[in-house]
Length: 447
Image (tube, rainbow, N blue to C red; front, side):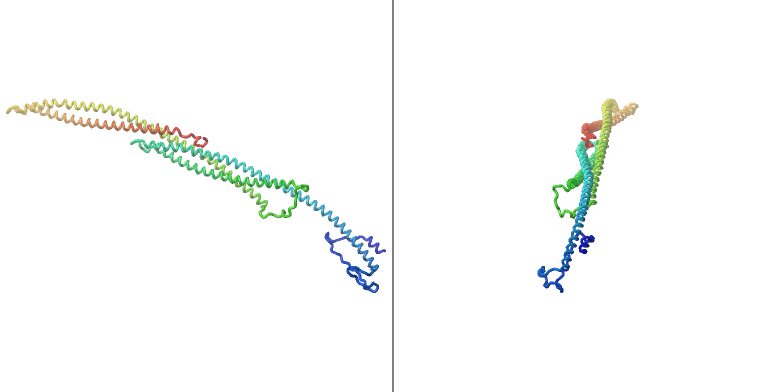
């Protein structure tokens, strides 16, 4: 009995076995093989002989010990289970809260990048619209340059119809050729600039689409993460996905994710700045070309004005010389008539003198004397012949001078007609056509 009390009241030793399934305990069963034992062995797990008292007590003590050990182990496992459940519950809550916080932080990052992408897309759209307006200005300017080009070429063709000697390569023609070359160069420049604008608009559209795709992906990811952020333990649409904890091979890292969007924003901003610079360049080109065209137009008009003044002055001088020539022709005709009359006037005295000499040559014998009368008549005839020769020579000179004056008159009249024709071409044809020259606003592409 004392041993039984001790076994019942003794505190069991602390268990150091970990919380797991205990190994099966093996017991040494006494066999009835001694002197005071019953004969026979156990067969098929049952014994036919009786147990000894010590065996009975030993079996009871074994049952007590097993019960105490199982009870203690159960209490220990219950305590550890409660503690483990509480710890795992707290850990699960902390982990879920941290995951929810991380999802919220991720949402903030995505909202920030999404806002930047949206802002960049809006800026690209606005910049592309402005560049399209500049492209339209280039097209209108290119169309407007066709008018001055046709005017300049028509002026050159009209001035080819000038007559000799006014068909000269004067300052007007030089300025017109410069204007044609300037317009051709401007047209080539406008075409190249237009191609740059078209390429830049295409690049703007491409980077806008890239940013929009990135923005769309982030919107979809934001919707997914917002839905994930609203999940809780009482949500009804929760399921087990055993294989969802695996990382995808194509998944990006936070660094590559941020770098991808940064590169998209950087390239989009770079193209936007290039578009801004191109717009400024186009504005400068249009302003410079319009000013150059108007300055060259003014130079051509000034050259036309000076040339017309020169032609007008030359025509006035020619007309003045023509009037003087006509007066001189009239005077010379009178002179020729006077010379002819003077010659006719000398014929009668010559006839008288020659008749006297002829008659006196019939004097008879010694009366045919070389007297003073004879000498005087001979000298008179010589003087008259010399006077007639001089008058006839002067008459020839006067007639030649008259013919020269007539030629000069014809030349002056022809030159006046040429000058009149040149003035008609420059004033009525060329300068009148140049009044249709485009304005500065049309050349700058605003109209």
